[in-house]
Length: 435
Picture 1 (cartoon, rainbow, N blue to C red):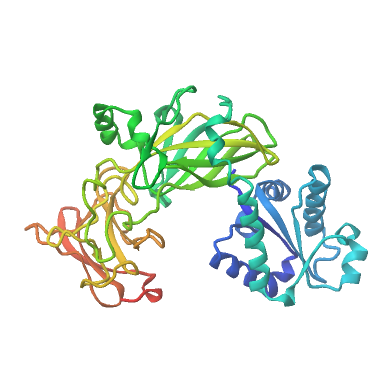
Picture 2 (cartoon, rainbow, N blue to C red):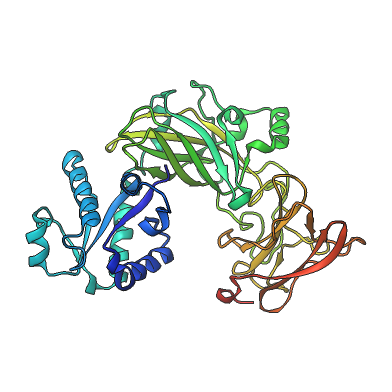
């Protein structure tokens, strides 16, 4: 079950005036939320869906308005959250006061001792406080990176799937296909003179021949954004994910105390082409980074199970190979210039540019055209999915036709049912970029 940062507890009458403006601010701050109208569809069991939403949310933000007081469903949501607080001792209810204090505390005396925010404090202040709380929670699981190797392995705590991609291009690798190290296996360290410290060197676990075999095993290659799914050793624990490259980096955690399964979103490496090119678009030394289908960074993924703030066990290590900003078949450069095809046409700093690349469809019949920021964010698929279409950078004579025109207009080649044509698409995010 995918964890959300907050559950929005509110009366339907308050959506327009309070909830929708709040959601807009949450989206801008990348705070995830559960709200009824997005999660409950025709024919769903309402009580079941609400209970699932409460279970998967770290906090419950309550809009205490005159419309809220005495309403059946909102009150039930609030009471469930307060009962959870009483039974676990963990603070989850975050009240926003819009009705009068006297009315609210007479109706809900358990809220009397809680710190609350008032709506007139303005949305920015409310979201800022929420971000502080969420970051503070993450910090509870930062600092254990140096202890991970000392934490006992429990084989009941398992990583069962790693998924990536969006929409129809979601790919997943199941447990049987993952490269999982033996329980006793330790990660090798070497002293790096340039950094003056010991660092993990995951590649040294393998011989040159083994590394070559890893290169051609596409199932082990992962992009920056991955979703980790697995099973706890026991219900009622928090699961935090870490990825080790040179050191262990904390990723995120799953806070669903009612579910055996966990799901954690993680970031492997920095993303985009920023690791591979300098600010002018020139590719880095190939000895440092291997492009295309080659083997990039090698990392070790591990999840640690916490009871409260104390680690109780960890999983076995899972080896991750970083290749491409999306899939191993990404094409990032122009044959003519050997530079990325970006929205900057000269040698200016490209770190603020949009760039274009390709990614193979899961059925292998063609590729899709994507655009993204230099760091891999704000990715958008320009190609209409179609099994009989092949989209590429070059025409039949090998001429490069993909290019950026004015106002975020991108030109590329497409072959549908055997006929080649040049297509043009608009990057929908162009308005927020400088071209």
